[in-house]
Image (tube, rainbow, N blue to C red):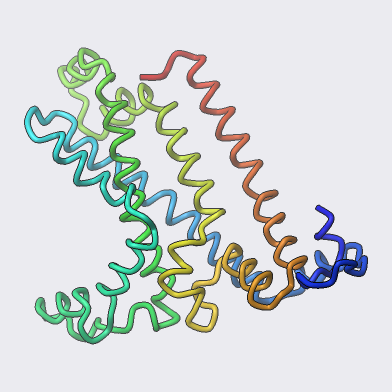
Length: 264
């Protein structure tokens, strides 16, 4: 907290006291707001997409008698890989001239869609976000699949006999039984959206022209590339302050549902 109220450049042992100047400068900094906007996009897309895709995959594999172990390994593997390795591999895939994505688009007659995915400011953020969704989806899949193993199959069968379709069975029978686990996974994914840094830093470094900067990468640049330790620390504090209320609310909701006996 001390560094938030001084102007520390990493060298001066007695940095001057500046009070709330770092906060006022932060509020007027357009790059901070641009990074905040990217963070919001990341939090919304990076939370909802893995949850939906992971839940869908888990439901598809849920009733499989054979091969489920291999599916779990295949989908969970990206989550345990180092983000640096994932970032490097996907940077090759997005490479404009020899990358697999552009080659695949050309092969199916969509050559006009090819672009430099990580070099184009309008696509760079979504390209990196797509990589992060791919990596996080396996985690959601494995946890939700484990929860589905404890769903009361008799209730599902009874609802089917009563004429409930697949969407109704999911909404009224399956989801209520796995909701505490679902909320827990959503919480972890949501908080990860606030603190995202590594995969963006590896794939784009926040570029091009700040198009993929989020608060985490902007705080790093301010602190360690511009030697504005106090300004970067203030940004890091803001990230923490924003994330904590969401974590508390989601945790209380998860505990409430568990105590109500809705858990799997």
